[in-house]
Length: 178
Image 1 (cartoon, rainbow, N blue to C red):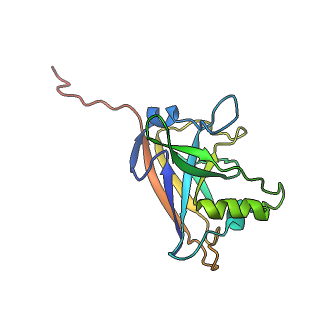
Image 2 (spheres, one colour):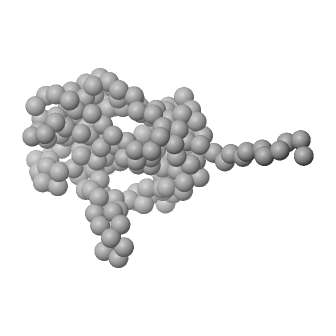
Image 3 (tube, rainbow, N blue to C red):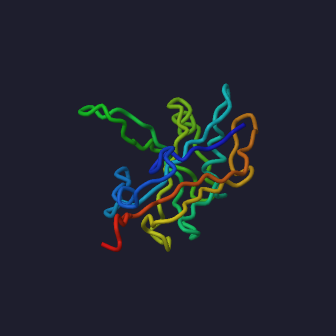
């Protein structure tokens, strides 16, 4: 059954620090102010590819909310994780494609580029006109629309909600009456 995973900023963590989340900016962006983002990996059953048209179509595949407030997201950006030559650490690299501005359709050359690289991770940047520009403390939900995306065999992604928590500074009182 097709499903998604939230890859960044939380990885598979259930709690992330608000400071760490807000320090993590999208260095693949060409904008002067690097936006926050969420990376989503689409998992397809063995032996089938992702239907890229379902990812780039104008229909949202999921919604992101932080503390119950919806985050407006830009169109997906295909991401390939490559080893940094100096450190060996995996870093995101954009796989450049040019979807049609209205339909999201890709050229055959773009489709082949994505298939050849096996791209299943996409970056969704916080839109510059979103009311939410930073991560805030509280519950975060990635709610996948039923049938919002498909694999090449026509299997639809099921409705699901993935959650994690963005936590702020905390303190413990050792002896409040001292």
